[in-house]
Image 1 (cartoon, helix red, strand yellow):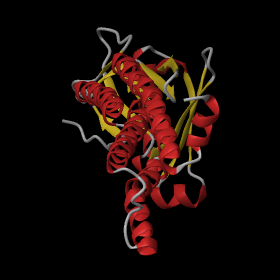
Image 2 (cartoon, helix red, strand yellow):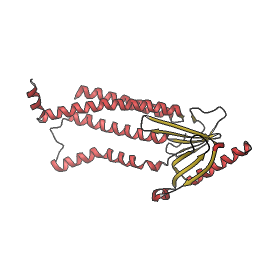
Image 3 (cartoon, chains in turn green, yellow):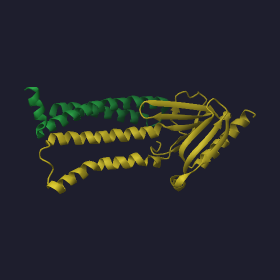
Image 4 (cartoon, one colour):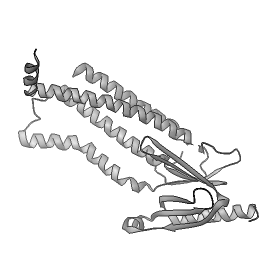
Length: 79
Length: 188
């Protein structure tokens, strides 16, 4: 497929949807970085102030990160 | 188990902070009043309802969801939307939870975490506290009894501010009493 053909494909409904799908995957990758930053920040916060809820916060942060990575992988596979 | 929405905890048994002395005891943990989180909570409610509103809009215009959008794409975007919402709520909640003012039997500590990348901790011994003032301003503060406590100290950082705490007069009273006690102990 030459470049002109690829560009003209973008202006079809299918091409536009494909472009949006790629953008969604890119946003999800960026979101994974954000989710990882949350785990680091929660660790730092728990270190500064330890309370009853510290373990729960750490667990939620890691579950959130794992879900973000899992969803990104799933998007790669099915989009 | 402490109330996860409490903005003032007295004598928290299992709490400790980084740098706590062996003979030090946390007497009060103060946070901004929980109601000050209303902005991100309202935003989250809108965020949670948005996919339903969008779906309702499509159905009322077309009679169905648009068929040119693949079902797998709608599925992924919906899950991602709610995961993002969870992350947004969690980040805001922990930010509120860990932005605390501690009053121990020896000092006051102000812990600030702004966003994900900024941390600032200030402390001053109770004996350095010179003056404590509380104020409540505005319709919101007056309605919910929320205000600031300003603490003048003799140290390097001359002013501590406990922002948006519930019942600031009570906090001022607690602090003043503790300072008096500490001064008596040290013979000031």
